Image (cartoon, rainbow, N blue to C red; front, side, top):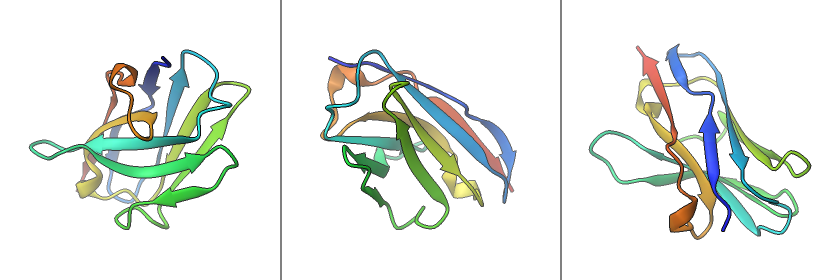
Length: 115
């Protein structure tokens, strides 16, 4: 099973940008669907962006036009470029497969957007 380690979070002002990285413990080349998820305090984890093997992407309505998911198969890394951040984007961000693999969950990376 592939495990994921997220990084790149931090504190940013509203309107700012962050780029998250997710390093996989093994090859992501054959993984059909990878996604970034997030969990805000007191809320359930939700998927925000997904990318398929061929590079097709899909986004939650709440982040569409602001976030971009990408991947580097050679580096076994998935990225999430987040622009025009809003306070409601504050959450811990994780990456995993779709459907999610229980053993794949990492510690996540915390993103805090100050108003």
